[in-house]
Image 1 (spheres, rainbow, N blue to C red):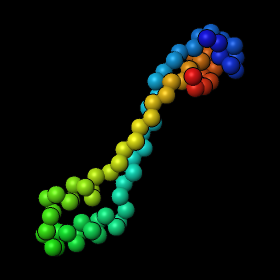
Image 2 (spheres, helix red, strand yellow; image 1 turned 90 degrees about the horizontal axis):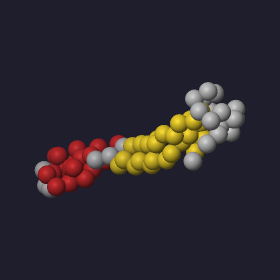
Image 3 (tube, rainbow, N blue to C red; image 1 turned 30 degrees about the horizontal axis):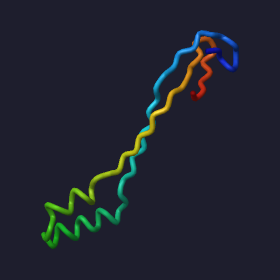
Length: 73
């Protein structure tokens, strides 16, 4: 494999993982406080409210060892 930028064949491939975490807004916290005051269903509902969602995506990139140019494969 050759580098697109400099033409070198000194290229290494890497697996890259992008991780995105989405946190709940203040509405979830207000509902949590309301449930704590009411004490009805706290054990079952609080974990559903306070959990954050995590998404990950993995892709492969080639990196030129001479010039540092990166590109997706």
